[in-house]
Image (cartoon, rainbow, N blue to C red; front, side, top):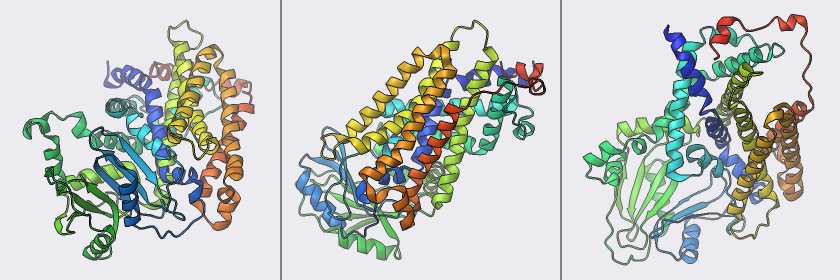
Length: 510
């Protein structure tokens, strides 16, 4: 048996078994490339560009007056081109509970709660399941690397087949052509993103060495690796905190007019409180880790922090994965290649199913049900989340949680429908495509009714292409889904029937 033949089973099963999980990860990651644009769309108060007079001290005063639980830390970030508002997050000291608030640029008051675009970012890296989800995603990333490398070995003519797409050929041949096409289009991208995705949390996946070397203190490990600064708590009441605005001005001067990003206040109720200001530079792949650490009571500069070279290399890998550099062109490219990854997975399961059609193989209906539940369920649930964002009352308590529940429940409904209709997958696919079309095409209309300043025509008239892009993509997706639901398969002509898979090709898709 040759190496190529030995890789067939590894590629088939190593690619099939995690394919539905990988679809969730890649699809959510594709949306996360535009998390800030989605967040802005979900907050109508941000639809009209407005210069804000809110300052860091306004945000700092708000948290002092409204959050009364002892805090371990809180962090705030000022307006940027993609996020034109102040945002604030915090972590409670004892419970570890977290909260976040985004401030209306006009009024300075908190905007209505929403999970925002960050929901898809969290779904991408931990499936909204905390540390357990993070480990599952890491395992899926390693499976993806195995499937990609074995696929390169298995598909000897992969680059030649890239230029051959026969959608009207027999089903298995058409699906394999599509699998090859979308696989080759994004092959370097998929390899890099799978590798860097695993590398991001390498210290969490393999913590034993660091724990042994640092006596079971992971904080000491990260401080040394990052070149960070930390002061142990004195367990004494803190004095009055210095204003943040003068510290921000000082940071700009020290950086030569470099802009501040995150402002972090550690253990603010203790006399050892530290205010850290991190530099922002979205033009670089790896965000600079230049940080100025000040005494929160006196305003004295305690340390100018620069990350060691090794950690800067690690940050560069993270930046390459996150796609927060290079402007909209890079994000659009990442988004298109992410969709190519999703299409590669869908076509791969299509090849597996078509190869086994007509056989009494156990698990065939399970694969059909999973295809419907995931490949249709996740996009439908994502659109349902956006519908909930527009329809739920602004003053609703735990509004963000309600949006997340709408996402989960709508996905569960699709899972149930996919299971019940698994024996009639073609008819089910058309019905779910029609539902996707209705949800996607209806959202721009709903946006125009509920947020008149942010509908597609108004955004285009202002030249606000980022906001208009959300509605534009929804219209494109809805139109494609409508076309797919109405399209009927054509009878294959004798000439087309000749485009069948060779015995060798069939062997390589076992």
